[in-house]
Amino acid sequence: MVKPAVEVDATPWPAPRRGWILALLLALASIASQFDRTVINLTVEPLKEAFALNDTQFGMLQGVAFGIFYTVACIPIGRLADRYQRRIVLAISLFFFSLFSMGSGLTRNYLQLFLTRVGVGVGEASVTPAGLSMLSDHFPPERLGRPIGAFLMSAPVGQGLAFIFGGALIQWLTTSGVLQSVPMLSGLAPWQAAFIVIGFPGLLLVPAFLLFKEPVRRGPGGNAPLSLAEMGTILRRRARALIPMFAGFSMVTLVSYAYFIWTPAFMQRTYGLNPAEVGLGFGLVVMTFGTAGAFFGGWMSDRLSARGYLDAPLRVAAFGFIGCGLFGGLATLMPSAPLALLFLAPAIFLSNTPYACAGTSIQLITPNRARGQVTAIYITLITLVGLGVGPTVVGLMTDHIFKDPADIRYSLALVVALPAPVMFVLLMTALRPYREIRQQLQAEAGSND
Image (cartoon, rainbow, N blue to C red; front, side):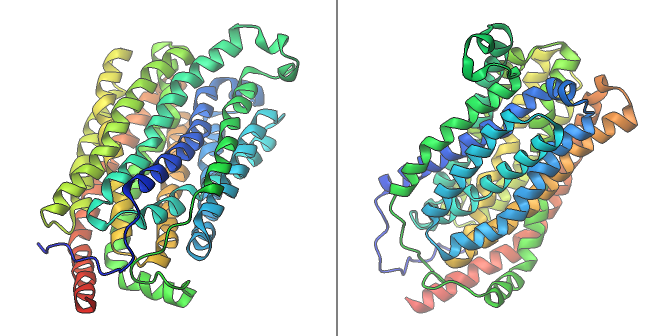
């Protein structure tokens, strides 16, 4: 173990209050994006009926339309974040993904819906790369885990709120008659009106990012943008750590997206719950235990880092995710909804623990002007696997292996249980090269002191 290096940047760190305000703004942007991503999962059955879809086609809405184009946009937007003011990149992206989210509610066929999901994915691709880069310029390395955890725990908060209020909203729009009494909503199906309602709040955050002061870029590589050749050198020198890290963390997103996209359909088909009941039960579990798991990952990483563990983020992520595979694989096999939710609680907690660890670990071994791009590469790869594989595989297994929509519980059990040991082995492989990179960076910082 090596003690943390002494900070050598002469510029004082911003006041912690300013950094936490930024974390709050980023969290609100993330919640807005999670509302859009999650509410569509409560509309599986009406969308299938409206457009005559099967499970595979619905999985493609999230896996291909959103996921693939989200990943295609992520690296170029990450490069923009490393070259220009990140607050501007965030504001523009937030504006467009909110508009496309609302546009999803105006679609009249599957192709139109598919294209609006592409637009949402492109817009949302900026939040994590630009957000993590900005946070790394507000907090010293040994205190970075908690604000990143606070930012990333907004994902389960947004997912939980979306399940709770989104389910209640859809149920209300379906049963209240409001669609006939409000002229602006006349002629829309409940799922269409829901998209318009949940997409609007994101527009309100755009002025807040435009008014927020851009932080001074710190550390190595903070003075000028890097060329593509320089970026290639940075990646090659870190490949022995980054490759198994990215592959391991992609197992986390595979499990997470499979769960969040298909659990509503699983609970409706298996236990006969309506969208409001699913939203309340699953939403409370996600919001409570997912939030706690995300913050726990950052908190525990900081604690181990303070004790001198240079590989603390990877250790916390690897050991925590093993439990997710165990509890998550059993949850969908339970005979009742309450028992399923009981097993889902620790699974959701442990599936969210690695996210803060991943974000922290990348920032700590990456030069400043490369952080947005390396984070974007990370997001691209884990999303390709998570959204591109997880939801679609569940749909394919249900349609073509089990051949009964009611058997989605078995598809979910397999897709959730198997990736956990794979992730553990991959992160264990990354520990040594990750420590070596951090030791080298600390030695260089010490020689410049």
